[in-house]
Length: 181
Image (cartoon, rainbow, N blue to C red; front, side):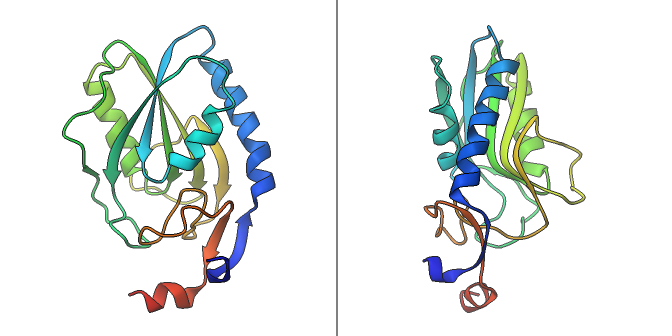
């Protein structure tokens, strides 16, 4: 698996240090307020588990399944909600966690759905934010790392369902992507 990586973009040690900072900032923002954490599956699973373990408060955690990449290296431009219903958020404060902010379509679509469902407040947190022009005008409230417009895997992010379990964020060798097309 490691041999498929052209280069490590963000190593495990750097990620670990950043998680402490993100958790502290989220706790500060939600200070004195109960909130529900909604995780966008599957990419944000690893990041969410690690950041939430740094929050010594009672938390309700819900998951939603949303797809926009559909097994490719670029967003399809379509956001599909794969669950029949969303978690109950009416009158509640929500922390929405996703793996990567790329086109912005997923974050905007999920935030809109949560607000339609009556969420009192929705704040977002992403592991990665690509420095690029977005299809939807949105920025995350909390960002782990800003990266260039490169396709990345590891630490929850995948390529065709693989590489999520890498402890770092890396860039696949081009021949791996080409061979699987």
